[in-house]
Image (tube, rainbow, N blue to C red; front, side, top):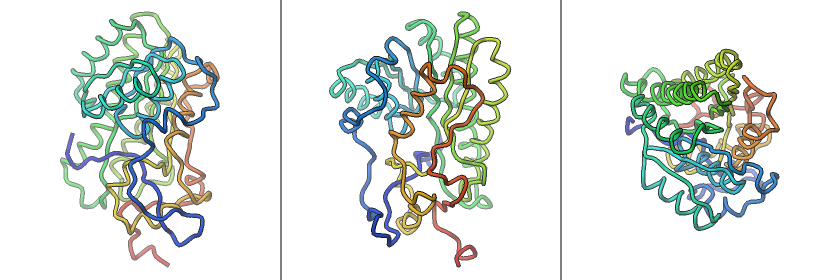
Length: 306
Protein backbone atom coordinates (compact mmCIF):
# COMPACT_ATOMS: atom_id res chain seq x y z
CA UNK A 1 0.00 0.00 0.00
CA UNK A 2 1.17 3.53 -0.69
CA UNK A 3 2.82 4.86 2.45
CA UNK A 4 0.70 8.00 2.24
CA UNK A 5 -2.39 6.02 3.11
CA UNK A 6 -3.31 6.31 6.74
CA UNK A 7 -5.98 4.92 9.04
CA UNK A 8 -9.33 5.76 7.45
CA UNK A 9 -11.26 6.40 10.64
CA UNK A 10 -12.26 9.98 11.35
CA UNK A 11 -10.47 11.46 14.35
CA UNK A 12 -11.30 12.43 17.86
CA UNK A 13 -11.64 15.08 20.49
CA UNK A 14 -11.15 18.70 19.56
CA UNK A 15 -11.65 22.10 21.12
CA UNK A 16 -14.17 24.31 19.32
CA UNK A 17 -14.55 26.77 22.17
CA UNK A 18 -17.66 25.05 23.50
CA UNK A 19 -17.80 24.13 27.19
CA UNK A 20 -19.01 20.63 26.39
CA UNK A 21 -16.23 19.77 23.96
CA UNK A 22 -13.08 18.00 25.14
CA UNK A 23 -9.87 19.90 24.37
CA UNK A 24 -7.42 18.49 21.85
CA UNK A 25 -5.20 15.83 23.41
CA UNK A 26 -3.05 12.93 22.38
CA UNK A 27 -5.47 10.20 21.35
CA UNK A 28 -4.93 6.56 20.51
CA UNK A 29 -8.49 5.23 20.54
CA UNK A 30 -10.04 2.83 23.05
CA UNK A 31 -7.52 0.41 24.50
CA UNK A 32 -7.98 -3.33 24.26
CA UNK A 33 -8.67 -3.43 27.99
CA UNK A 34 -11.34 -0.74 27.64
CA UNK A 35 -12.93 -2.61 24.73
CA UNK A 36 -13.00 -5.79 26.78
CA UNK A 37 -14.81 -4.05 29.65
CA UNK A 38 -17.19 -1.70 27.82
CA UNK A 39 -20.83 -2.70 28.46
CA UNK A 40 -22.72 -4.13 25.49
CA UNK A 41 -26.44 -4.38 24.80
CA UNK A 42 -26.00 -7.93 23.49
CA UNK A 43 -26.35 -11.10 25.50
CA UNK A 44 -23.42 -13.34 26.26
CA UNK A 45 -22.96 -16.15 23.74
CA UNK A 46 -25.04 -14.47 21.03
CA UNK A 47 -22.47 -15.35 18.33
CA UNK A 48 -21.27 -18.61 19.84
CA UNK A 49 -19.62 -20.81 17.22
CA UNK A 50 -20.00 -18.28 14.40
CA UNK A 51 -16.81 -17.73 12.39
CA UNK A 52 -16.22 -14.07 11.52
CA UNK A 53 -13.42 -12.74 9.31
CA UNK A 54 -12.51 -9.09 9.91
CA UNK A 55 -10.11 -7.26 7.62
CA UNK A 56 -8.34 -4.28 9.13
CA UNK A 57 -8.63 -6.03 12.48
CA UNK A 58 -5.40 -4.63 13.88
CA UNK A 59 -6.65 -1.15 14.69
CA UNK A 60 -9.57 1.25 14.98
CA UNK A 61 -13.05 -0.01 14.22
CA UNK A 62 -11.79 -3.41 13.05
CA UNK A 63 -10.07 -4.00 16.38
CA UNK A 64 -13.20 -3.01 18.30
CA UNK A 65 -15.31 -5.41 16.26
CA UNK A 66 -12.79 -8.20 16.84
CA UNK A 67 -13.01 -7.71 20.61
CA UNK A 68 -16.81 -7.51 20.75
CA UNK A 69 -17.35 -10.48 18.45
CA UNK A 70 -14.90 -12.54 20.54
CA UNK A 71 -16.71 -11.47 23.72
CA UNK A 72 -19.98 -12.71 22.22
CA UNK A 73 -18.51 -16.11 21.43
CA UNK A 74 -17.57 -15.88 17.76
CA UNK A 75 -14.56 -17.59 16.23
CA UNK A 76 -12.67 -14.49 15.07
CA UNK A 77 -10.13 -14.32 12.24
CA UNK A 78 -8.45 -10.95 11.71
CA UNK A 79 -6.22 -9.87 8.85
CA UNK A 80 -4.28 -6.75 7.97
CA UNK A 81 -0.97 -5.48 6.63
CA UNK A 82 0.89 -5.00 9.92
CA UNK A 83 1.58 -8.25 11.74
CA UNK A 84 2.66 -6.50 14.95
CA UNK A 85 -0.77 -4.85 15.24
CA UNK A 86 -2.55 -8.15 14.61
CA UNK A 87 -0.42 -9.85 17.28
CA UNK A 88 -1.25 -7.08 19.73
CA UNK A 89 -4.97 -7.64 19.16
CA UNK A 90 -4.67 -11.42 19.36
CA UNK A 91 -2.71 -11.24 22.61
CA UNK A 92 -4.97 -8.54 24.05
CA UNK A 93 -8.12 -10.58 23.40
CA UNK A 94 -6.49 -13.63 24.94
CA UNK A 95 -5.47 -11.61 28.00
CA UNK A 96 -8.60 -9.52 28.55
CA UNK A 97 -11.36 -11.69 27.06
CA UNK A 98 -9.89 -15.14 27.60
CA UNK A 99 -10.53 -16.28 24.05
CA UNK A 100 -8.18 -17.38 21.28
CA UNK A 101 -8.49 -15.73 17.88
CA UNK A 102 -6.63 -16.27 14.61
CA UNK A 103 -4.71 -13.71 12.60
CA UNK A 104 -3.12 -13.52 9.14
CA UNK A 105 -0.98 -10.75 7.61
CA UNK A 106 -2.66 -9.81 4.33
CA UNK A 107 -2.66 -7.03 1.75
CA UNK A 108 -6.23 -7.06 0.47
CA UNK A 109 -5.42 -5.39 -2.85
CA UNK A 110 -3.34 -8.45 -3.76
CA UNK A 111 -6.07 -10.66 -5.28
CA UNK A 112 -3.92 -13.81 -5.30
CA UNK A 113 -3.12 -13.42 -1.60
CA UNK A 114 -6.81 -12.93 -0.81
CA UNK A 115 -7.62 -16.12 -2.75
CA UNK A 116 -5.08 -18.10 -0.71
CA UNK A 117 -6.26 -16.56 2.56
CA UNK A 118 -9.91 -17.41 1.91
CA UNK A 119 -9.07 -20.94 0.81
CA UNK A 120 -7.04 -21.55 3.96
CA UNK A 121 -9.73 -20.04 6.18
CA UNK A 122 -12.59 -22.09 4.70
CA UNK A 123 -10.51 -25.27 4.91
CA UNK A 124 -9.67 -24.65 8.55
CA UNK A 125 -13.06 -23.48 9.83
CA UNK A 126 -15.49 -24.67 7.19
CA UNK A 127 -17.80 -22.05 5.66
CA UNK A 128 -17.33 -18.78 7.52
CA UNK A 129 -20.49 -17.09 8.75
CA UNK A 130 -19.64 -13.40 8.45
CA UNK A 131 -17.13 -11.35 6.46
CA UNK A 132 -16.50 -7.80 7.70
CA UNK A 133 -14.50 -5.59 5.35
CA UNK A 134 -13.04 -2.89 7.57
CA UNK A 135 -9.61 -2.53 5.96
CA UNK A 136 -8.90 0.57 3.95
CA UNK A 137 -6.89 3.74 3.84
CA UNK A 138 -6.70 7.28 2.56
CA UNK A 139 -4.82 10.53 2.87
CA UNK A 140 -6.36 13.98 2.85
CA UNK A 141 -5.50 16.33 -0.01
CA UNK A 142 -7.21 18.62 -2.50
CA UNK A 143 -8.28 16.42 -5.39
CA UNK A 144 -6.66 18.61 -8.02
CA UNK A 145 -3.27 17.74 -6.52
CA UNK A 146 -3.63 13.94 -6.31
CA UNK A 147 -0.75 12.02 -7.85
CA UNK A 148 -1.64 9.09 -10.06
CA UNK A 149 0.05 6.75 -7.59
CA UNK A 150 -1.92 8.19 -4.66
CA UNK A 151 -5.25 7.95 -6.48
CA UNK A 152 -4.63 4.37 -7.56
CA UNK A 153 -3.47 3.29 -4.11
CA UNK A 154 -6.62 4.54 -2.38
CA UNK A 155 -9.06 3.24 -4.99
CA UNK A 156 -7.24 -0.08 -5.32
CA UNK A 157 -7.32 -0.68 -1.58
CA UNK A 158 -10.77 0.60 -0.66
CA UNK A 159 -12.71 -0.60 -3.71
CA UNK A 160 -10.76 -3.40 -5.37
CA UNK A 161 -9.46 -4.88 -2.12
CA UNK A 162 -12.96 -4.99 -0.68
CA UNK A 163 -14.22 -6.62 -3.87
CA UNK A 164 -11.57 -9.35 -3.84
CA UNK A 165 -12.58 -10.24 -0.29
CA UNK A 166 -16.28 -10.25 -1.18
CA UNK A 167 -15.93 -12.31 -4.34
CA UNK A 168 -13.57 -14.92 -2.90
CA UNK A 169 -15.89 -15.46 0.06
CA UNK A 170 -19.00 -15.60 -2.14
CA UNK A 171 -17.50 -18.13 -4.52
CA UNK A 172 -16.70 -20.42 -1.63
CA UNK A 173 -20.13 -20.02 -0.04
CA UNK A 174 -21.57 -21.06 -3.41
CA UNK A 175 -19.22 -24.04 -3.61
CA UNK A 176 -20.07 -25.16 -0.08
CA UNK A 177 -23.80 -24.39 -0.61
CA UNK A 178 -23.64 -22.36 2.59
CA UNK A 179 -25.27 -19.04 3.53
CA UNK A 180 -23.12 -15.93 3.77
CA UNK A 181 -23.20 -12.50 5.35
CA UNK A 182 -21.01 -9.57 4.25
CA UNK A 183 -20.69 -6.28 6.15
CA UNK A 184 -18.73 -3.51 4.43
CA UNK A 185 -17.48 -0.53 6.43
CA UNK A 186 -17.72 2.48 4.13
CA UNK A 187 -18.27 6.20 4.88
CA UNK A 188 -20.93 8.90 4.70
CA UNK A 189 -20.64 9.92 1.06
CA UNK A 190 -24.07 11.31 0.15
CA UNK A 191 -22.84 14.91 0.19
CA UNK A 192 -19.33 14.16 -1.00
CA UNK A 193 -16.07 14.18 0.97
CA UNK A 194 -14.01 17.29 0.22
CA UNK A 195 -10.27 16.67 0.56
CA UNK A 196 -10.94 12.93 0.35
CA UNK A 197 -12.39 12.61 -3.16
CA UNK A 198 -10.49 9.40 -3.94
CA UNK A 199 -11.86 7.68 -0.85
CA UNK A 200 -15.35 9.04 -1.56
CA UNK A 201 -15.25 7.55 -5.06
CA UNK A 202 -14.09 4.19 -3.75
CA UNK A 203 -16.54 4.06 -0.83
CA UNK A 204 -19.47 5.04 -3.03
CA UNK A 205 -18.37 2.26 -5.37
CA UNK A 206 -18.47 -0.24 -2.51
CA UNK A 207 -21.95 0.91 -1.48
CA UNK A 208 -23.46 0.45 -4.92
CA UNK A 209 -21.49 -2.72 -5.52
CA UNK A 210 -23.00 -4.04 -2.29
CA UNK A 211 -26.52 -3.06 -3.33
CA UNK A 212 -26.05 -4.75 -6.70
CA UNK A 213 -24.66 -8.08 -5.51
CA UNK A 214 -27.13 -8.21 -2.61
CA UNK A 215 -29.69 -8.85 -5.36
CA UNK A 216 -27.50 -11.10 -7.51
CA UNK A 217 -26.47 -13.21 -4.55
CA UNK A 218 -29.87 -13.47 -2.85
CA UNK A 219 -30.50 -16.86 -4.55
CA UNK A 220 -27.28 -18.04 -2.87
CA UNK A 221 -28.59 -16.91 0.53
CA UNK A 222 -25.81 -14.33 0.82
CA UNK A 223 -26.72 -11.02 2.45
CA UNK A 224 -24.66 -7.86 1.85
CA UNK A 225 -24.93 -4.63 3.84
CA UNK A 226 -22.84 -1.56 4.65
CA UNK A 227 -22.15 0.54 7.71
CA UNK A 228 -21.33 4.19 6.97
CA UNK A 229 -19.49 5.78 9.92
CA UNK A 230 -19.21 9.51 10.41
CA UNK A 231 -16.76 11.19 12.80
CA UNK A 232 -15.53 8.31 14.96
CA UNK A 233 -12.84 8.49 17.64
CA UNK A 234 -9.85 6.35 16.68
CA UNK A 235 -6.08 6.63 16.55
CA UNK A 236 -6.56 8.07 13.06
CA UNK A 237 -6.45 11.51 14.70
CA UNK A 238 -2.69 11.52 14.16
CA UNK A 239 -3.01 12.23 10.43
CA UNK A 240 -4.96 15.47 10.79
CA UNK A 241 -3.63 18.95 11.67
CA UNK A 242 -4.72 20.27 15.06
CA UNK A 243 -6.19 23.43 13.57
CA UNK A 244 -8.60 21.35 11.48
CA UNK A 245 -9.55 19.25 14.50
CA UNK A 246 -10.96 22.30 16.23
CA UNK A 247 -13.97 22.19 13.90
CA UNK A 248 -14.52 18.44 13.86
CA UNK A 249 -16.89 18.23 16.87
CA UNK A 250 -19.16 20.64 14.99
CA UNK A 251 -19.39 18.36 11.96
CA UNK A 252 -22.74 16.89 13.00
CA UNK A 253 -25.88 18.14 14.76
CA UNK A 254 -24.98 16.21 17.93
CA UNK A 255 -21.70 18.20 18.11
CA UNK A 256 -19.65 15.28 19.33
CA UNK A 257 -17.83 12.22 18.10
CA UNK A 258 -19.02 8.67 17.98
CA UNK A 259 -16.76 5.89 19.21
CA UNK A 260 -15.67 2.56 17.81
CA UNK A 261 -18.18 0.79 20.05
CA UNK A 262 -21.01 2.42 18.09
CA UNK A 263 -19.70 0.73 14.96
CA UNK A 264 -18.95 -2.59 16.65
CA UNK A 265 -22.47 -2.93 18.08
CA UNK A 266 -23.99 -1.98 14.71
CA UNK A 267 -21.92 -4.74 13.12
CA UNK A 268 -23.27 -7.25 15.63
CA UNK A 269 -26.83 -6.27 14.68
CA UNK A 270 -26.02 -7.09 11.04
CA UNK A 271 -24.19 -10.31 11.97
CA UNK A 272 -26.85 -11.67 14.31
CA UNK A 273 -30.33 -13.06 13.53
CA UNK A 274 -31.69 -9.57 14.28
CA UNK A 275 -30.97 -8.61 10.64
CA UNK A 276 -32.07 -11.82 8.93
CA UNK A 277 -34.41 -9.84 6.63
CA UNK A 278 -31.98 -6.99 5.90
CA UNK A 279 -29.86 -6.88 2.75
CA UNK A 280 -28.66 -4.24 0.32
CA UNK A 281 -28.85 -1.54 3.00
CA UNK A 282 -26.54 1.14 4.39
CA UNK A 283 -26.77 1.84 8.12
CA UNK A 284 -25.42 5.33 8.73
CA UNK A 285 -23.80 5.97 12.12
CA UNK A 286 -22.78 9.62 11.98
CA UNK A 287 -24.70 11.69 14.52
CA UNK A 288 -26.71 13.20 11.68
CA UNK A 289 -23.72 14.51 9.75
CA UNK A 290 -25.11 13.29 6.43
CA UNK A 291 -28.19 15.45 7.01
CA UNK A 292 -26.42 18.53 8.23
CA UNK A 293 -22.74 19.12 8.77
CA UNK A 294 -19.33 19.18 7.19
CA UNK A 295 -15.80 17.93 7.67
CA UNK A 296 -12.66 19.47 6.19
CA UNK A 297 -9.89 17.03 7.24
CA UNK A 298 -7.00 19.40 6.55
CA UNK A 299 -8.86 22.62 7.30
CA UNK A 300 -11.70 24.64 5.76
CA UNK A 301 -10.53 26.73 2.79
CA UNK A 302 -10.80 30.49 3.21
CA UNK A 303 -13.39 30.59 0.40
CA UNK A 304 -15.89 28.68 2.57
CA UNK A 305 -15.31 30.61 5.78
CA UNK A 306 -17.91 33.14 6.84
